Image 1 (cartoon, rainbow, N blue to C red):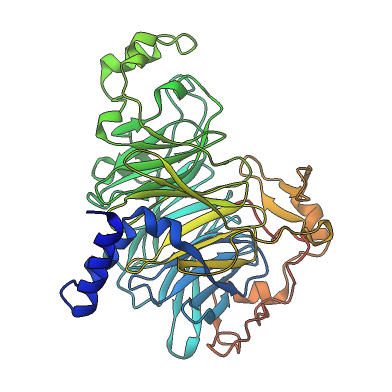
Image 2 (cartoon, rainbow, N blue to C red):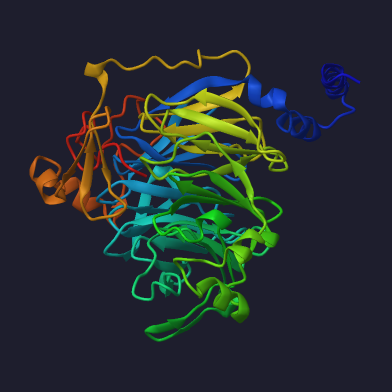
Amino acid sequence: MPPERTRMEELWEREVGSLPPKRFANSVMASKEYVQSLNIQKRLRKHRGCVNTISFSADGSLLLSGSDDRTLVLWDWQKAAPTLSFHTGHRNNVYHALFMPVSDDRSIVSCAADGEVIHSQIEEGGRVITDKLVELEFAVHRLAVEPASPHTFYCCCQDSSVWHFDLREGNAMELFKCRAAAYYPGENTALYAIALDPRKPCCFAVAGSDQYVRIYDTRKIFVDGNSSSSRPIEHFCPPHLIARVEEEITGLAYSQTSELLASYSHDDIYLFSREHGLHFNNIEVDKRLLKDVTELSFSFVDKLPIPKTFKGHENVETMKGVNFLGPNCDFVTSGSDCGSIFIWRKKDAELIRAMRGDKRIVNCVEQHPCGIVLASSGIDKDIKIWEPGEGENLTITQAHEDDEDIWISSDYDSDDFIISDGFGYVIDLDPAHLYENGDHESEEDEDTSSEEHDDGDNSAKEDDDGDNGAEEEDFDGGNSAGDEGDD
């Protein structure tokens, strides 16, 4: 039976009530036609810097976003209108923000380039109370919340540490520092990504400044006073990258069945399952692999199964995430340095579509939890909402040279910052110099950290013009270290 007729039959069954809406939506979202029908239907405009993080609430009614302007915005995305906007208290680019589960969308955690992890509690009337949970020396890149727990979550940090938080006690505990592979005993691995296994929440994956994805089991992590003991229970790495020492991983994502995606900088996206484990904890494997790191036993490497590989996108300039799409994780998606969103079919790694989503770079692509909707963000200051149907022309108007905003971002390899003029020219700058040129902490910034917020900005009546009561700087034109960023 032709696919078109099958779809028509499903439409008819849905109309007459014999096919539940959820089953119909799942069928549509698992189809190639769904991917090819996506278009930009709405743009959410409020932020003054590039948007580094987006996430839907559990029921999909709200979208949470965080930006280089150091604010968080809650959106009624269906109306393309902000319902609440507030300054987090962060002193630098917000890298990641998530709703805590089972909290009525009133409990939010965020992390940033300033090394802070902040809990924001939204009270009646839109007042926001913020609490700084920890302040580290280096950037905190990603968070991971425990499913069905409104209290506990994890973060990974550029200083190689992994932290566990319990909001009931305001407790922040460093679990361990991620050590480099055995043949680089003097180095730690900066961490840029963390993801919890949905089927085994006691296990999580971390990755960062080397080629390995490491899996840890919290039941096997021992913390005693100021010391801790931890060892990954598994490692993943594409065989051809095992001997390379300049690889980095910027994004991780688990599927419903515990398959694990890893997005490599300057390389491709790989899909790992249990069969791809390197079993470094096996002494015999350790000996064979580490026998000579410069001349690996190729007979050993050649026997390793090759993970499914998703090719075509560019992941060089920024910290890009990676994600699954579809009701059964039928597709893989990522942003790209070319400004496009790439979507591959998971089962055969075929590139289904590359659709333009940003003038410069797309960093985030998130799927609505229950509906046929995608959200994307990147260096542009808006968020795009994608749905099937007629929409904007996918070829987003190219900016003229005089429209190109200079954007500034934290360099994840150093404490310095990078300025890019949008044409490939990069300059390293000292952060202190940037702050001296006008991006010093304002009194408003200092007052909002770990204090109650009860100003006129925190309401659903805000104008959608980017104005924000908690901040008076305009993050246009890249004149501060808080402008459009790297993550």
